[in-house]
Length: 232
Image 1: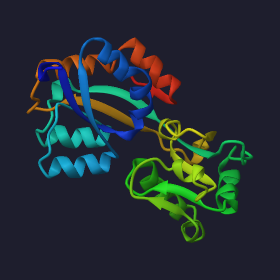
Image 2: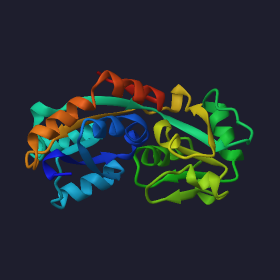
Image 3: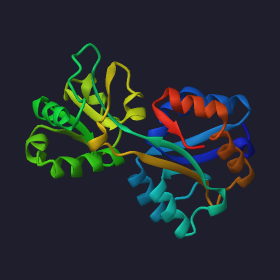
């Protein structure tokens, strides 16, 4: 396939499940190819600050604000994609603990053998501050299974953790697990994600087409099916 039909992107892990399930196969059916570097937004931003460039970026809203302010992406190409909520998961077949409210959620965390969370992802960064705020950081971290980046639910499958916390769409990527549900509203943090074209995009026209593809009705359906709320 010639390079003229290929788009490159740096994308937050949050959209991986809908991209893999529907959005990228539909793009390829149109005769295009795509090369995506998947990372938490924090890692993407470090790479971009160090000079890495691509055609399209999918990052958190606040990170996109920074990219626009720095003149790295084109403001007029910005599109709002999805809102993501954080959830909890257990290994398939295991009992679903109670997380109906803040108190039940705290008790479930304290009773867990080990909670897996990501140090590099938005959900993990939030969780770290949340347990400090709730006054249970010492107890949770003493038995936590932390990963630098990637999918926390993999630690359920290996048996290293009994609970995994992450964006619901990221939990859904891992087979062999069950999602208990979203965190209670009192401790929930919804994160919104935007996409835009780089100023130095090698193929600006195709990059623009890809952005439109990310906002199609079919993409909206895929986002919903994978635990995300479309923002368009």
